Length: 263
Image 1: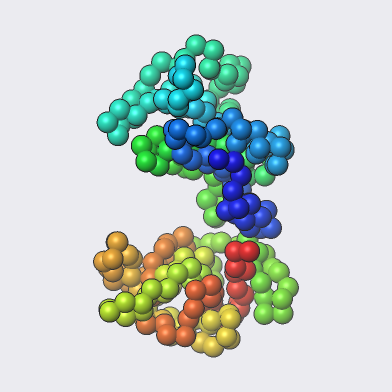
Image 2 (image 1 turned 45 degrees about the horizontal axis):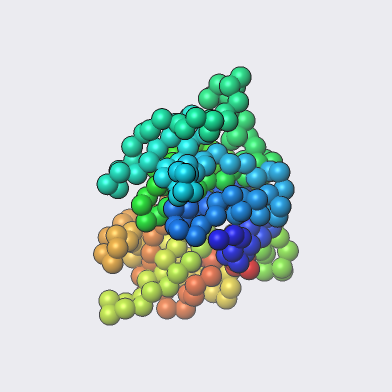
């Protein structure tokens, strides 16, 4: 149904940090959805860097019946919650024939990384149409954090400074969620760099106070599975950090910074 406030906020967040991004148009199979109007609005708002790599298929009644994988020149529809390949409707294949698949992937990956291209995908979460294609393209086109652009952290002085994301780097983690229940308090974290262990002492960038980490967990639904360590890129939880709040950054005393909150 067009450009949402959520998209505007997410775009601004990525833009301020020079982060690569996809746009995913959801609910394309709903009765009143209008993919073309939404795509046109995206082009008008964000310019010609917007590039469709997955597009819908419509029947004579303008109902979305499937999607086309533009890069692989394949079309699919959902049958009993399973993706089934079908023939591409006549006149719908607009792939540039003179480029090989490898050349297109290489060019797209470079464009995404350099922020000269923003791929547009589409689908439906209810029918799962387009979900596999979305995950495949995340793997194929988006840079992983280690090879992506440098990240920017906020120093206690208020100045911004770039830092490298590395498995062997200085340990740091961002607290993105806090849950308290009858079993205690869990601080959900994304490990930004390095490796953290349960006996590690980190500094809370917001308060400047040291925090001795408790037990570490990976969460499987409501079940907490204890682990010995969480490494760069892992999402997990720490138990019983009473003074830590959502939005805090836990970091090594040698490098104190915090991740700016989402605007």
